[in-house]
Image (tube, rainbow, N blue to C red; front, side, top):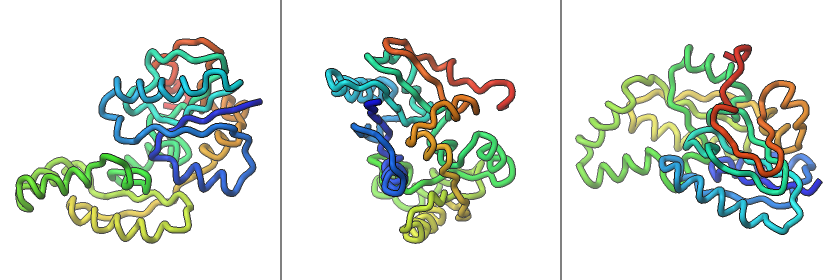
Length: 231
């Protein structure tokens, strides 16, 4: 089956790491800039643009690798191929392996999650913080961002198994200090993302972890609402 992958660039390092270790038949890989999540129309248009690049390529299955952040799915129309997408609210849930693990961490260690891909994204809160320092001065910027993060205790750094994780942790410690948070390292769980990239679609469907659309279908946000068993 000729397969394409369109993914958020935030996940590029994790995807490359998994595909470098595991045999996966993905014929075309395309990325969408990570800084578009705050503007649904721009994010959707970027995905549509990548989907248009697949026309006439003989693609039989498209793997979309996004969470629901940015509401990327609502109203998208699939092409001449089966389209699959993880049933994850965002990439953090995907990298932690399950919605249950995410909820557990939210309850016991109230933190703002950080991944290496997020840190290297075109737009992120730390870059905005540094811009605020230049614009308003250190004292005012600190006051603004400590207000933003007052509901959090930790900056939670997700270890996704990459060999350069320690360098990421050191950067994360400095960011945590800037935001008035404690750095906390947690182990990610790659099985969901790995199984998705290796196209164990049937297995993931049995776990209610993917949504599958036939060709020329209209995608809907409500299709990704967790079942009662998952809540």
